[in-house]
Length: 87
Image (tube, rainbow, N blue to C red):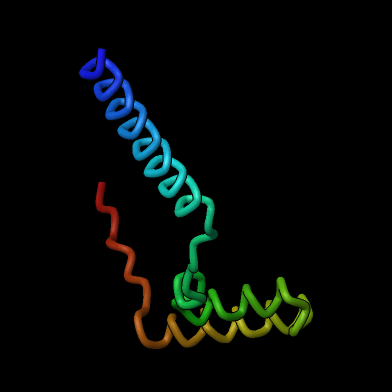
């Protein structure tokens, strides 16, 4: 009878420790993740302009004028060459 009582106490203690471990894991998962701001930062000039437009820092016409300037600069630096079709 003594052995059976000791066995029950050991099993109960193991269950209590297991439940404590699970609760600690759940509380650790409940903490919000710290996401760095750099992860969402724009990586291009177009992205910066888009973010400024969405935040209301620039108007739609300013955005369109800036994008037109970017397109003109890109056309000057890297002109589009279309191959001739000879058919």
